[in-house]
Image (cartoon, one colour):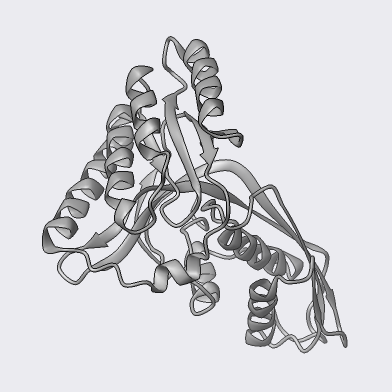
Length: 293
């Protein structure tokens, strides 16, 4: 990307998946560094950017001020004096803990780069997002351990086993920026436990061990109850145990909770039908999601 006189621009497109909460979210020793482990799911944000020399930056729909700031930062940083139109469409609900804002930003960054014939590395997207807001690690293609407040990769874990999530929404929304600014006051014992959980998650992803991933997700959801409690956590855990599902997955800074089911489960169809019906008895908002294949 250079100045308008030397760059052949085009309509740019970008997309980014969301997540269903986090497999784990906590802090690590020795200094309480915040981190999370992403759970990529097949819901998407799509962005389209049309460069326009001599015009300001416009974003559709309105209200996407963070995406506008990102576009401005990228254009000015690469010497483009003009503006353009950024259009975002998404199937990710806002304020629910599915990384809707992060996905919008990553898709927007890719659309701007694509308009100028460039491909951004994940680390370059991190640089573009840093300082705008805390971000999930959705610029990476698979599950990652990510320092969301720093917008920095901790390390890549790899592709998760094929999982289905029977999700429930407790209603309302959560301001994730405010949540991440809230003091967490983890104890030394808690940060040590999170470190052990992160190491176990890495091994489980490598080995395709869905049962261990479910156990870790459930434990992280329990530990998060003091910060963003879910009223349906205990009923969901009981239902998961009764149906021999993998465990419970939480949007730690959102309103969603899900029960994990392995696609490879020989009793998958019956369990999925039963879990969906039983979750419908707990809440009137039930959504089935799938991890990226």
